[in-house]
Image (cartoon, rainbow, N blue to C red):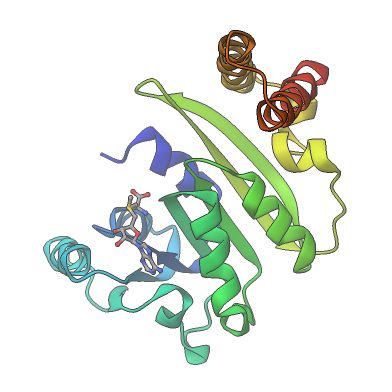
Length: 225
Ligand code: SAM
């Protein structure tokens, strides 16, 4: 059974998509979708040999040969033009790594209409990438599993302009503010407050004051939202 995290990612993959799941590890996501007739075809891209071997095993054991294919490749190099990939998923990595994978081989995104991205941290990197590369955020989700909070971002082609606050908190999430969103940012605010408290007793210096101002700004931005 798929984790709640991957089930949430799966729920944003359109019916009959041709999917490339980059950094697929065991290929659980494409295998799950293919077994349920949710995708036409799937590619499980992996840069590391061990996870690639796991993907090959999952595909063989679930009888999905011909439907899902594992490829050993760096990021979007797993995709070829003739694949006709229209959806890409990248899950379980930090936002900056996801953004760098998208940035590195942008030409492979030709024909891709939807990106379903699940950053473990720093979703801001993905929103900035979207804004500067002709994508916009059509859906955002946030949820908790095993005490960890995860975000899912869905991108489609289109222009977008996000201000600093929208980049950090998410244009959709900051409007809806579901419980997991409030929990995440309350937690973040509390740890910033704690650091600021500790800084008060540290020896004063220009460097410390600059850092303090920066943290204070960061905390104020959370409080505003
Ligand atoms: N996507 C799965 C999930 O969400 O459960 C697996 C996540 S796992 C933490 C991250 C995987 O991404 C690892 O198997 C790693 O080898 C792979 N990875 C990291 N950088 C990659 C890259 N540039 N191209 C392809 N795979 C990559």
